Length: 556
Ligand code: ADP
Ligand code: MG
Image: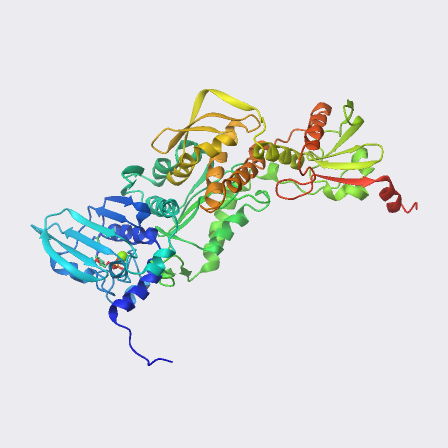
């Protein structure tokens, strides 16, 4: 073993930097937070080279006095707290005094700033934490320029992802902050292209509109209470993943599994399996009842009354969701109709919906299948016999499989062309993803054009997708694309998109199949590589042969 020694300050700072500065988006987060603490009304962010090459954040805040500028980049230097008591009554975003020192130690950093009272401001330039320049400079507010992040820590630089991925993280960070501070203006440019522009807004709803557009917001409920403002999915507006779930405490974005759970529990019995609600929760709690100092990036918090907050969130959402939820609740009722009774012992368990109409007995000659009768059990399952046994078919699962394979193989799926192209406004992050993948989307039936300002024009969609769900499906597609790692093969991406489309709620009508439709479906299934499983691997049909029936009835 080597001798014990105290690490030099520069190295200590670089190690500490690792806790706060993980990637370009962390730099953006810290710098915007400083601008907010400095009471800026307008904050501008410019990004080049995925933020690895350049990040510039400018604000019109109170500025840093010239004689304090060199202190701002010292570790543990802050103007925001003075004593330990202050730690329990934090009203600013920052307080640890670590961000600028950390950023300075792993980049080439220039800070230019001037306060209102000063005739001329000051500018300092540092490389890897060493001060190289300190000069007077006229300025308004504060501009921080971070070049070549991690240039002196190649090991960390190696962990950074593609520009695209880093940009996505930056967009997420700016979006999140813009949501939490509606009364400040934000502008984000990536490679000189404006990606997000939110002028100062009068309220939260207006800010959400600026970021997401009218259509998105119309799918959300709204609660406005003194300590809780919430926008959350209406009963038929769910997503395939957890995108667009945000929690803010006193304006600070946090992650909190318990509060997220509170939301899910408000949706109990409404939320279909595999689906997720959109939600934006804005909680106001007394600063003294929450501890932000448990995570270096201040991402996690500790509440003094955790259960109380949990119940408040769950109950407030429930109050809105429950009155209208009865029609969505599908209890497992024992069935009464004769037609179903006959099979109850065997497939009673598959029964989900009480039949709304008497089960239909449809007799049709089915080409290739001879003469097939089919009978519906609820709205999802149907049973038919080929004379040699009984087949139970989950027609939705089968339909999903057919669509999935057709999309994968580039077969004709039938397209619906809009007479007038539909204009859809997306979140900056979804927009960026969609326009980067236009050819891939084309291959799975969506003709999309870039229309600027976070909106796209959709000219045609697969015929089986319902037009009403266009916004939701584009968002889900964007999310699926992002879930795929940047270096996965194109086929992987296409598979994933085919699955997203095939299994999307907008494709899954509640309609029962007529004899002709069933015949068409069965014929389609004949041509599949794997007709027996839906894209998620669940069975599409179960067959019980005569021999098996005999065994079940102990007739052998
Ligand atoms: P913290 O935000 O935790 O105090 P930082 O390292 O982020 O620590 O910043 C150090 C100090 O520099 C801040 O306390 C603040 O006084 C000053 N400062 C940083 N950025 C700005 C800004 N954009 N405008 C005004 N002052 C700033
Ligand atoms: Mg700070």
